[in-house]
Length: 418
Image (cartoon, rainbow, N blue to C red; front, side, top):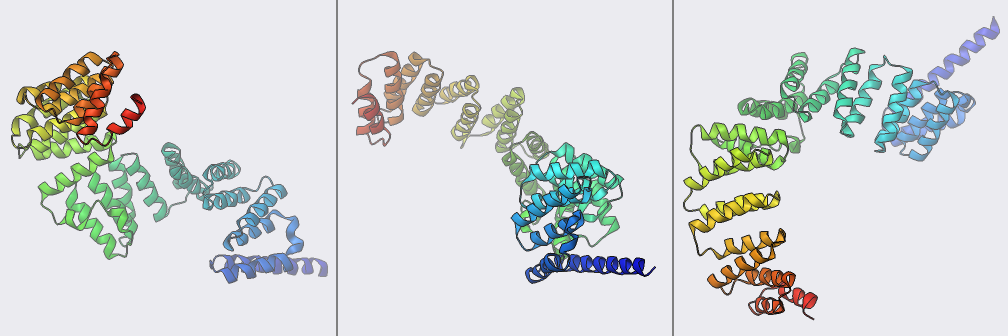
């Protein structure tokens, strides 16, 4: 009886020491984590035959920024007990903090295999997948975390962010509403819901949630930079314009579609050439050439003062998209509007050169030079076309461009003529 009592006292003493180690580590204080390591290295060393000891040692080492020691310790824990899910979980946390996400992911998956009903493990796996942009896997993990009883504001907020990334805005709204209904003083939830409302084009509610988030102590201004004070103080028309431009800048399929919705709303009240031009840009990026052409033609028909700029924007867009046929079509329209547009002929020459049609490149460059003999870009593309055609006098064109002050001509002369 005395022997059993003694064993019980020793066990209780050990548990109390481990609790003290845990409490010291969780303070995130460097002096306290050193105290925790001293207890482990001196008082509890005899327990180093057990995996639990090495898990505690790894956590204390990590808290002291001794990451190499932490890696050694967590691997020792797994060697001591390869079925210890908590050891693999802590390995995942450690390597996640080291930004070694692939290692962390494997560790969390092993922990889940060993303890599939631990919601915390699923949550950490979800966050790792989120960082790895494995959005479908992250969503599965979030659902499993909730299914297994791990429900926190942080989980739901990150789940909403995931749905936002997946462009499932209505589901993201449901999640953020659930958080706020549970806790009306959750600043992160209001901040995330502000973004959700923004992408749902409910700008009034987006601004309201943004203001509430900051009133409740939300600090990350960059997180909500698209919902600026200037944006919220603007008219509804201006908000649609600003949002449309932000969606165009994002350059992804969903954003281009949202931009089109914004421009549809704007065009329904005002026939503005710029709206048609920008909506056409969105259609081009969605591969809808038919609607892009309709919008570009409408923009050009509405524009007088800036028509040439519009032509150049449209042509540049098609060139960047390697749609040279469409670019040439609009160059023809630009030339029809002004037969003396030497820049348009030069642009045609450059496109034909890119298409390796050197005769047409030469022809259009000569027309441009006939209109404006001092336009150096035309001389340069003419020289390049002549070189490809085997004309012996191509260097004269490069030298002419240099004489007219073109800074790129010397390099061409050095490359081709010397």
